[in-house]
Length: 85
Image 1: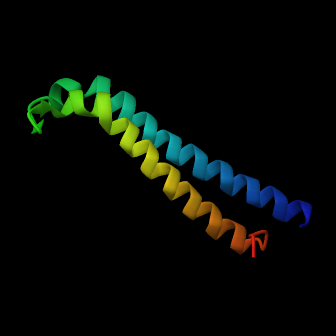
Image 2: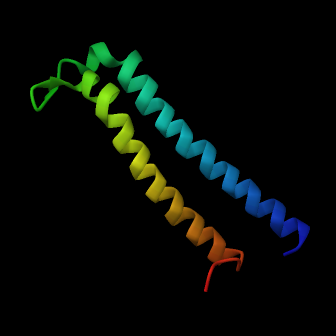
């Protein structure tokens, strides 16, 4: 892989990481702490939604984001022909 391709690969990888970690931060910090009072008016299984995000939701979102990252990286690897064949 040329230096230009390598730089583009890592730029794209970092872009994915920043976007996905920003989503996780927004869900865990924003929904679990900042917007908890507004979300507590909604109940899930008898628990306020703000509490649910603080205790469970951010973990679930993080696991989903792991699968999204794997999928994005597999596509990126194929694009730059560095995938495992």
